Amino acid sequence: MYEIRFTASAERYFKKVKEKRLLNEYYNTIKKISINPYIGEMKKGELAGVYCYDIYYNRTNYEIAYMIYEQENRTIVVVLAGTRENFYQELKRYIKDKQ
Image 1 (spheres, helix red, strand yellow):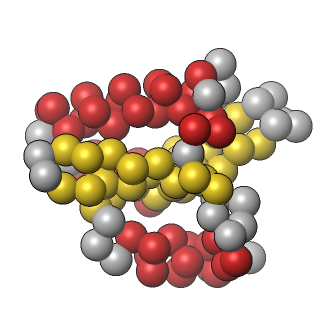
Image 2: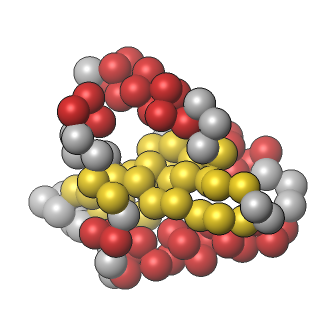
């Protein structure tokens, strides 16, 4: 299993989620990702190096974006989470700010 870490943006998002069933869905998905991080879709172009995984809950599409670090103690960093609406624009902005 990989160690899971969260960026400040991801932590803020998870603190705002009040619905316990949705949080549980995120928890189960992150657990799956920690076992096999390559189940997500690897992005290309501006988002190269970022993996995304879809969650469908209550007829809404949610996303989790994460990065895999094999060299540093096999770590996964959850970069961003949220609904699909404007998700990739936020993710691009986050990646650009970190470069």
